[in-house]
Structure formats: structure tokens, C-alpha cells
Image (cartoon, rainbow, N blue to C red; front, side):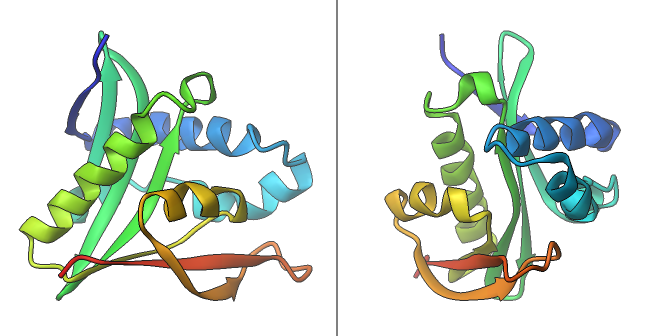
Length: 152
């Protein structure tokens, strides 16, 4: 079975938030951490008006999503989450490549993201490099890798 990609709808924001939370919990994070990161996990419907949301589906079932924003000649990958039962099936890769294509098509020379430390290896396998890190909203010394991909 192949997956299809389509534009995310504003009306899906709540569902996409729930999907993101399921995906994040798959890393084994406790409820305290999940409560701390909640503000960053919410998919605001406005994001889907002003940014590009991509949903991966198979037979009408949503498997994952990504949201990318263009700022001048740079793009920022806000989100990329996959339903845990579909990890390691190429869905994240397909979403990432669609985000890269969208960024290139819309004039971006680079794609950046601030991601979960557990996802760093995934992004490195797709050609991104860690260029910096930033403190997580969780605090307690938790740092998030800032990843970069040259699109030129």
C-alpha cells in the first residue's frame, strides 16, 4: 500500500495536535514533560492558513503530518510527526521530502528546524546537520538540536 500526501485542512488542527502528542509520547516521556511541552505541541488552525501543512494518508487514514513555513529565502519545519504504529515505514521521510520540495519551490535556500533530541538521527539520515542547540521550554538543562539543510 502506498501513501498519498495532501494539503492539511484548518479543521484538522485538533486531530493533528492529538497525533503529535501520540507521536511524542512514543519516546517514553512522562506526563510532567508532556505537560511542559504542550504549548509547543498545539497545532493552531492559523498555522494551516499561513503555513503549508502536509498530511500523509493511506486509504483515508491519517498517518502523519508536517508543517513548513517560508520566511524569505529560508524555510522552517515547524512540525513533523508520524503515528507511532507507522514509525520506520518511510512516512516521515516522505513528509520531509515534500516539505523540502515545497521550500525549494517557494524560493528557500535552506531548511531549518528545532527538534526533539530523539529525532536528531532521523534528520541527519536525511542530510541535515546540527548547527546549534537551544534550551527547551521544559527547562532543567534540556537542549534541542537546531538542524540545517542547504537547499541551494
